[in-house]
Length: 413
Image (cartoon, rainbow, N blue to C red; front, side, top):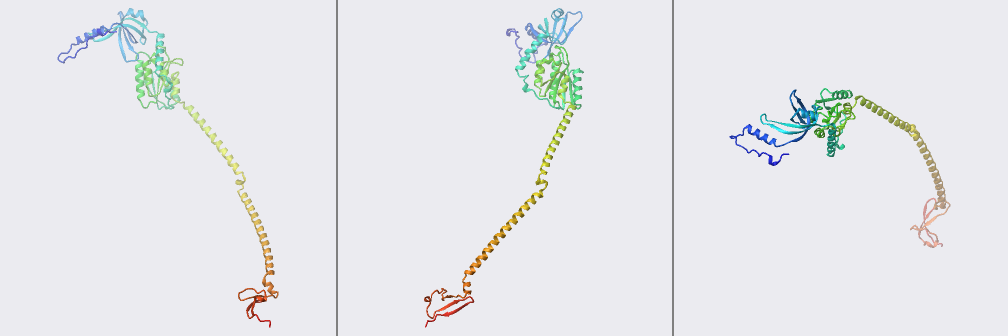
């Protein structure tokens, strides 16, 4: 750690007429860096140079999650003591001191101890990172997007001319021949793997025509597949708006990017089977659906035909005139009955009228008159019932059966 007292005072602004020489600036930078002291540094070996007969080894150390590298120089004995089998792509931890060379204006690290990080330590770091990313919600299943049923174009990130690329393309086109791919070949192991895959993800995610992205790699050692557990790659996959399928290694291999991806395919072949449907299966499903629809329609038509046949077999529809004939017969019977009853009542009424007429005729005054009787009425129409009711000389009207005549009342003398 650099103390505040050891820091070089900031350079004051100088006028253009009094610039600082490059030598002075280089010396001040060297003095400041020289006070940093020894530090422990962790990274991935991008390149290692062992010159024959030389005692110095040059190592380019790279940060896997950033596009940044530094040069480490060390003694061959230091390297042979700490990491004799060191090769490109390995992870190391080194104790080094920054050195700035004023003559060339370059910065390097001088290491006096180098340790190659074992797979056990790397797995422990990956497990720690897994818990961190899980706590942040990168593995949350609720945020995983549904894969499209039939993507217009599939983005594929894989190694150049790799078996994984061949498996994905061949199996996908065998299942759905018209599927389109946009393939970006990247390094899938080593120091450049993570930045190249992150850049490829950004390119494909920005392509509006790409509906799903496959990140694929075949088998390999655990060390070779370490880039797929890199934090930067996991966050890049999490930030994609396009659904991502991870297909790395074999069925038993697990990487942090598998937890972040929207779908984890066990192998690249499995990813090809998942990204597009099988045309033959879809045709079979369509044929099956057509058969079911045809059977359903036939069943429905037969059922309705049975209903129609049952309705047509009913008397009302089989012989519709029979109902009318029955109603007509009932109407005729009722009409005949009504006529008989009316005729009977008329006959009875006629007989009663005849009898009543005979009685009226027998009891009427005219019948009495026809028997020789007469009706005597005064001038005012009053019937005379007694001789005392009339006076002498009074004119009376006498009604007979054959007509009327007038008479005057005379005295008995």
